[in-house]
Length: 468
Ligand SMILES: Nc1ncnc2c1ncn2[C@@H]1O[C@H](COP(=O)(O)OP(=O)(O)OP(=O)(O)O)[C@@H](O)[C@H]1O
Ligand SMILES: [Mg+2]
Image (tube, rainbow, N blue to C red; front, side, top):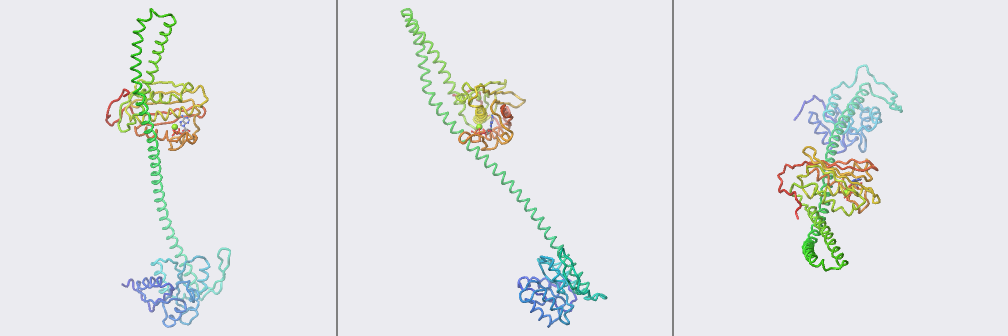
């Protein structure tokens, strides 16, 4: 189809050594209604032009045999071809191109990759413009300063000089637009990249959180199993010993009634001592039974069900497990508020208390004799507030800011995994609560847990007493 068919009394000569580019140019120029002659290099173009005078030449610059500048020069040196306008296709990599174009007598520059509309507009204006401006007889040699360099140039006439410079400017504007478009696309791609990066970071953080939860869950599950196993093993012989203790106590009372009047004072003292020891043993056995109850309470890691627990009892069971680490070097003060029933997943809740208390114990210097941990529970509207405060070494801000990160620990290898607080944080959040840390280096730390007293999920069972 012929678009906008111009009246052109002759062909447009396209000079291009790349067959692909040549074909593309041919289609564009023919599409605009011009007749096209094709040449693969400067020498062939010159020969064709001599045979048939073109209305314009569109020529590549870099070509074997004869480049675009040389072709331009030779063309304009020929009688009858001197006023054929030449459009050079160039990358315009440096200002020297403009000087070379001027001296070669080129009329117009179009940069590659070229804009079809710009190429055709240049072609049209070159073909249709009058070839000589009346009164413009040429300028002769002149000096053109570009930057620090002065270049001698000999423009053919004012039209060539202005035409070439304006076309260079137009090409630069076009390239600039291309660059701006590219920059916009790059910015958009960059934004997309940043978005994907953020998604990736979030996925990675979630992965680490899940991993840490799994590690801690596995740790707690095996501890729970171990504790449950030990409790069970102790429970059987304990029941047996408690029964026999009762039997022995009763027997002793009966024997004592009958035998006491006949005993020597020394034997009577021995009998008294046996009675006292039996009473002491009862106390010890009670404590063992208590311990077994607490061990079993602790080992109920049944995270699947929300239950109503007795918070004091849960804290006591954890303290019992930590007793060997508290000994007489750390005093534990309990300030339990009135409300003590709480809806929660009992196992994970124990885990939080355990992690906080273990950290408090760790923070108190092993050599300190005046260690103090204060456990406060209170009701704060619909929330239960549990504070665990210690007078240990405290934390600098740089540490406090990172304590909830999985695997962050200041403890030696093998002493801390850095999971305790990140897991606790996750558990508290799962309950719809908050966990906060307040600390002063050298003074101590206060960890504050806030949990909703009631969970909206219907509780599966009520368990306020310790099951054994
Ligand atoms: N009560 C506290 N006093 C001082 N520092 C604390 C206290 N609680 C936590 N920290 C700091 O926070 C860090 C992270 O605690 P977290 O319980 O997460 O891990 P950990 O105790 O190092 O290891 P573990 O996985 O065995 O609990 C600790 O290494 C410690 O530096
Ligand atoms: Mg810890």
